Image (cartoon, rainbow, N blue to C red; front, top):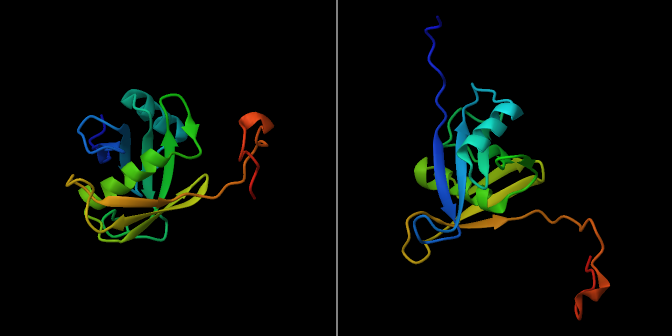
Length: 161
């Protein structure tokens, strides 16, 4: 029988886009230490068990210390209960909220390295409607459309490049 203890992974459930408890869009946020290598299968199983719209897995960048409270760069992957997805805005904001508010990271901006490229979330001064937690601003990637815009959308439906 092994006497080693399992590695604990800090877990937060964050409701994005709301000032009301149990409102908004929920996401789980798992802070995976460098010492723990979770397989895609394991992350998928955790997301399925959470059964939330999204479960985000953050891991410290390989160049940073093993401390979520001081690093400003993180690897980030998102899983629904059934699949990994290439981009999720609300789970990215939930991840930043956990890093800023729960881990007390003093950085003004975080970089998340994802399948869709780097995403940046900045902590702004103040809060919205007196709610707990910081007000956040996210810079989304500018990706070209994969399909042409249908002509029958009406006025203003021209593709802008």
